[in-house]
Length: 232
Ligand code: NDP
Image 1: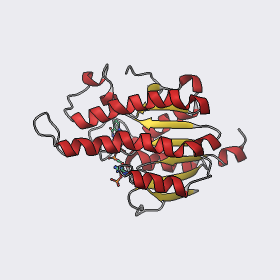
Image 2 (image 1 turned 90 degrees about the horizontal axis):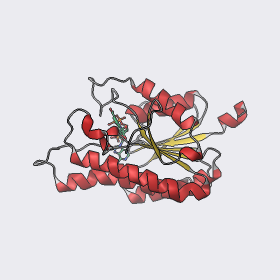
Image 3 (image 1 turned 90 degrees about the vertical axis):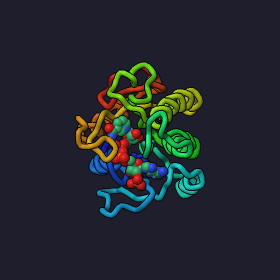
């Protein structure tokens, strides 16, 4: 790809105001991508490079529809479904049903609706990649081997996001759109906490390499930020 072509590439990132989303936006902008940085509120600090802010609440289907309307006709190379929440109260006996549904709506339904709404934009792009930021916590095979985590809603939302990705990979193959489920590692962010092992810069760098190297043959796979396969 020539320098000019690289400069034409566009990535849309949800939850780009802080944490991993913000770091991905920073790194893509530094490499001269066009970045559509989405969030619920405009950032207090501006973004670098060719970055524009677009308002988006991923838990609100109307907000997703409005975003897609504003972006109609604009090619998109990569969609990063990054925004997510954990439960405020977790635990078998303590979690609240409404909270459970809010987490599912944000972490699972939001990415699915966005993929559907932005499919025409991805078809106009050259790379055609949907990267769903999942979690090893959502793996049936490996998630329970990690440190104890009784956030039922979060775990279920990420397990369901994996199925969303696998099904999308089937349905969007006809458009040559590649769909990935990606575990970013345990990162030092508001969600991951200070005791986490991984700098968000390193996770973002690794995820970008996995995204850059993605192929249609690998669509529907579940990988870590450093490219290892994870069992579902
Ligand atoms: P943070 O909690 O630090 O940031 C979450 C981001 O999501 C914020 O920008 C937040 O925006 C946004 N967000 C939440 N709800 C919505 C919504 N309804 N609409 C739009 N944006 C929303 O999380 P991380 O950066 O740590 O996590 C990024 C991704 O990585 C998530 O998918 C997470 O599940 C996953 N992950 C993280 C791990 C970790 O160790 N941190 C481990 C495994 C997976 P706002 O500022 O408006 O709240």
